Length: 215
Image 1: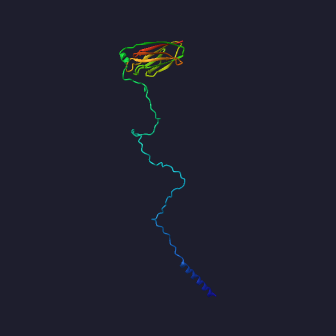
Image 2: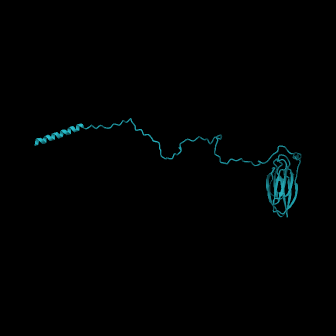
Image 3: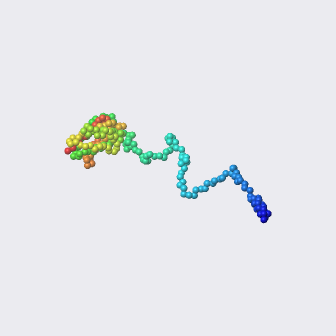
């Protein structure tokens, strides 16, 4: 019985030895340091918002260069007109003015007019060749218009009237490019009705006077 047990133990340990010889040997996994893992970026097929690059270089603009064209306009495009753009200056002097250019023309009395209006409108223009004549207008010794350049169009002011006599004076500030200072003056009532019309010829400093009586 004892010998049989010993035989069984011998056979058992022998089988263990054979089993160990059949098992594969373990070897460590070697990864080469020279091989790198390549990661390929895949295009984003989602709905990402495409923003413009703020690093994109814009064209160089030299603001100090006066010859550089600029598209910035601070103002609307329109044609500006200078003062006196409507003044027409004829290089030729009219026969009447040329004939009188050497004469002296002193103060003139234009006459008188009556009206019941509370105010009147005084307008005047150069009735000869426009040559830059200028006048100053007074009402009862008070300046109501210091400097009017006479053109081919009427220019003037409204003047409030005092009860009774009102004196209007037109002083020639110059004689333009050819003397004398020439003008046509018209007087209108408060309803726009023409009351009076006359003309003057004045040397520089002379005055043309008109009396307006408010009834």
